[in-house]
Image (cartoon, rainbow, N blue to C red; front, top):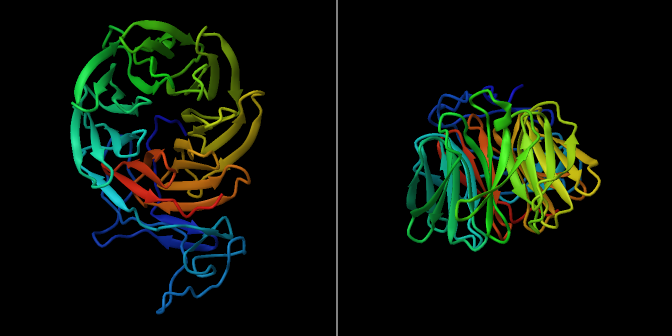
Length: 393
C-alpha cells in the first residue's frame, strides 16, 4: 500500500483469540481517508484485564504468563502478543483540542512543559502540557507536516506547504522563513534541529514531478542554504540528526533510508529492506541504532555502524507505521501504527503495551523528555497524552 493512499482502519481490534468491537456512546468512529475527516470514536486501550466487582481480574496471570484475551491477566496487566505485560493506563490522561483538521506532527519542549503540534488546518499550536491550555497559534501557508523545538526550547520550527518557519517561542513571533523560491514545486515534509542549535534541515517532495527535488537541505538558522543532500528517487518523508550532530538520516518514499555526513554531504550508507515508502525515522539516544517506519506495515531496527537489520516489528492492527521513537533512556520503542500507539522493549523486542483508538488513526508521536508520557496526533483533530510510566522494559 502506498504511503499516499488512504489509511483504512477497521472497527474491530483482535486481541489474541478475542475480537472486540470499538464503540463509543456517540456511535463509534469509522475509518478515514487521507482527504476526509472521520467521526470520533471512543478511546480504548486494548488489551487490558477486565476487573471484577472488587476490582480484581477474573484471571490471575502475571507478567510473562501466556494469555488469550483480556480476562487472563491480573488487574493492571495487558494481554500483549499472547503474554501478560505491564500497562499503566487504558485512557489518555489529557486531550488537547483546538485544531480543525488532522494533527500530523507533535513535539515536546526540552523541559517537557510545552507541546508543539502541527495540523492540516494551516496552523501549529503551542500548548501548556500541565493544563492542556493552548498558548499560541502559529500560522502557515498550508498544511503543517512536521514540527520540532530547538535544543534549548526557545525556538520552534514548523514545516509545511512550500516553506519552513522559525519561531520565537516566548513571543510566538516568526523569526525567519526558509524557502527554496518556487512556491509551486515542493512541500516541506520533515524538519529537524541540529543538537548544537546552529543548523536546521528540511526535507521535500517533488510536486512538480522533478525527482531532483526529492532532497534534504541543510540551513544555517539565519536562513543561509548550506548543503543539499540528494540521492533519493522519491519524496523524503523524514529527517533526523544523530545525537552528536555529525550525521543526518533521511527516510524516503523510495523504500530506503540514507545516512549522510552532515558536514560534508557525503553519503555513508543506504538502509534497504522495506517494500514500501518510509514515513518516519529516528536515532537511538546513543546514536548506535535507528528506527524506520514504513507503509509496508513494518518498523525496522538497524545498526548504524554496519547498516545491518536487527529486528522487524509488526503492529497488532496490521497497518502503516507513521511515527516512531525511542524512549529518552533508549530502553523502549514506540510507534504510531494504524489506530494504535504501541510500545516495545528495545532489548528483548517484547511488546509492552498497546493503546488503541479505534477509528482515529495515529499519525505522529513524541516521548516526553522524562519518558513518562507519550503524545500522539490523530485524524480526529486532537492530541492525546498517554501515561506510559509503568511500562518496564
